[in-house]
Length: 98
Image (cartoon, rainbow, N blue to C red; front, side, top):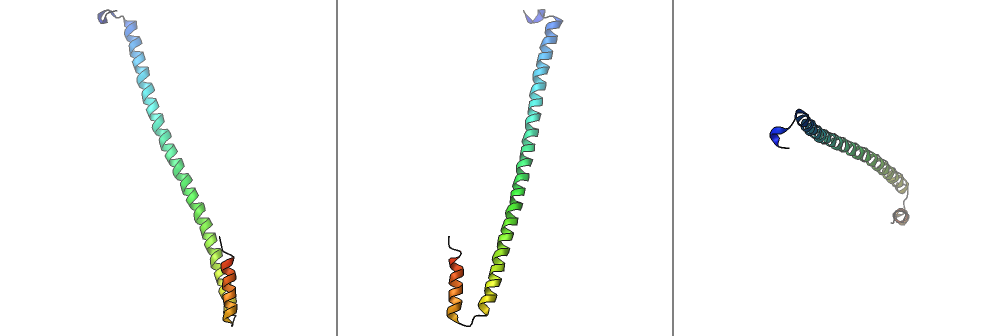
């Protein structure tokens, strides 16, 4: 078929095919961008939650260490013998070996 002899049906078929391809490409691009944006937001929310959990765990751990130091200093302050103080400090140091 030559171009000049195309019927109205052929033009309509070509136009609807081109329109279908164009709409498919546009919808695919929009879906990809939306999915990418949603994925980025989800990753950001997960990282924020992880940071919050880590902060909470670190805060509890640091408070426990603070309380241990307070208790140890109170106990050591009552000791008058430097050798007893040294033994207490050595025992505390031994309990934290890795």
